[in-house]
Every structure is written in structure tokens, then in C-alpha cells.
Length: 215
Image (cartoon, rainbow, N blue to C red):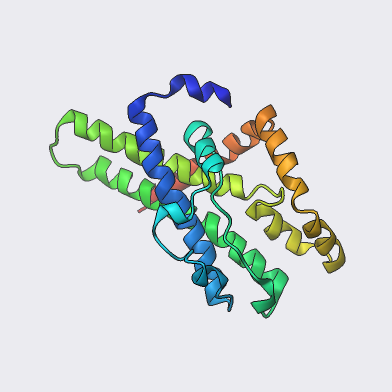
């Protein structure tokens, strides 16, 4: 994981910073909007349906995104008592964030492929800059989506996959959700998530390019 540090330069860091702001903002707005449509006004009342990135950025999660291509944003507050089916609806809200990132990444793949086919004559430096931005945009959005699907509380994946458990076991695990942060931090420091996440990210990227090749 920490090998990424040696490969960074100022231009790449600035490019990643822009993409991180976009990716995390869409991720959190998607959570809040899904909750709102399912009957929970909490995110809206707290201003979390805003497109202002500063309302959504978690400093540590953003730094992890910048340096290691995986990270998290400031969690959207959800009140499951507003939901008709709390466990199911919470899983839908949790899924909305990663899905938003996958949609952004797919749009990035589509634009990159269209530019590769129909790009008008432009300066080489601009073409390289645009290509690098789109590649960063694709990788970081997929990285954010995949990482948040890891089934470790409090990541989105825990609420999605735990929703299939019996209610009693589900509630017991969710009551100890904060312990998941310890597990998550240890996993990040030790790098045990690097290989499986990279495999999934590369698989999703290849799948998207394959789908776009048919368009």
C-alpha cells in the first residue's frame, strides 16, 4: 500500500484531489438521496444533499484515497425508524453510494473510449493530461465503490451483506459496529485488503471496458 507514495508527483496529487472531491461528493449525496426517497429526511435536514464537497469529506478517508486509492467520506446520518422496512431500506441506502461511483466510472470509461475513437486534433500535452485524468477518475471511483463494499462495519458492505442475516444476529453485530473501525484500521495498516481489492478493481475496470467495446 505505502508503495504508492513513491510514485506520486504534484500534478498527479492535484488530479487525484479533484477526483476525490467529485467521487466522495457523489457517493454521499447518493446515500442521502436514497434515504430521503425512502422516507428519511435526516440527510436533507443536515445539508447532506448538497454538492459542496466540504460537507462530505472525511480528512483521514480523503488522505487514504489520495495516497492509496481506497478511502471513505463522512458518513451520512440515517434514522432507520423512518423506513418501512428498516433492514432492507438501510441496505439500499448503503448500496446507493458505491453504485453512484460505479456509474461515474462507467461514464469515464465511455468518454475515454469515445475520445480514443473520435478525438479531434489536439496538442499532445492536452491529450495526455485528459487521458491521465480520465484514468484516475475511473480507478478512484471504482476503488471507492469496491472498498466501501467490504463487509466490515461501518463500511457500506457490512449493512448490505449483514441484511441477509436473521434480525437478532444482525442487531447484535450492528450494536458493536464501532469495533469495526479497529479491524478496518489494522487491515489497512497491514495491507491485507490490498490484493483482494486490487483484483476486484481490475476486474471491474476490465468488465466496463469490455461492455463499452460493444457500444
